[in-house]
Amino acid sequence: MEVIVFAEGPSDEQFIKRIVAPTLRPLQVYLKPELLNTSKNAKGGAVSFDRLKFNARNTLRQYPNATLTTFLDLYALDTDFPGFLSAKKAVDVYARVKVMEEAMAQAIVDHVGCRPERFIAYLQPYEFEGLFFSDVNALIRTEPDWIKQQATLQKMRDEFATPEHINDSPETSPSKRLEKTLQPKYKKTRHGPLIAEQVTLACMEQECVHFKSWLDRLRELAK
Image (cartoon, rainbow, N blue to C red):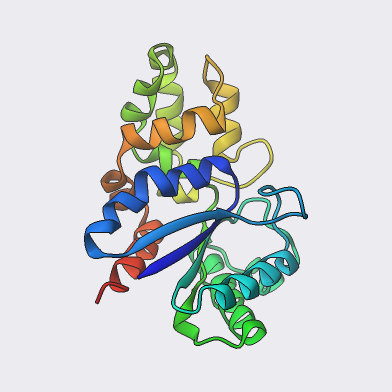
């Protein structure tokens, strides 16, 4: 089974390619990450729902036997996504993403006219980098000098029920916390895949139930 994964940026794309995809190959589920076209000559960056719909329709028609899924951050998601306003009423982030994923899935299926099982809507709460807080001790092994910030990062992690609850403000989103805390400075494209290798997918699944639920849905495609 071929699965196209719409990724938000280069670090997310590399995470899917280098960390997630190899674990699914033995099941004959083959992930193919792609950056969304933002214009004729550019890919990646902020994703509007209109752009997602356009790319989803083209991709599902181009690959009639493939499944399409998303790997997009809830943090800073465009307000034009289905369910955005109603989801904001939910207190817990898991309830919020459930509302939005269900609305997004229905909207894409209606727009494309495809079978519902061909599109798996997924939003990462709140941000891709939240997964890295699954194991702070492993995270800091990525750069020798990062050990100096171990206690600070662990305190951040301990303030939340799970890594997926680390919040979504412009000052305190997971990526902003890493950028402000770590020296040498955290760089998404350089450090993202390296941190993921240290933390391991197994640990992320253990700590992040929503992320695990997405991987389990992809594994079920092998059945």
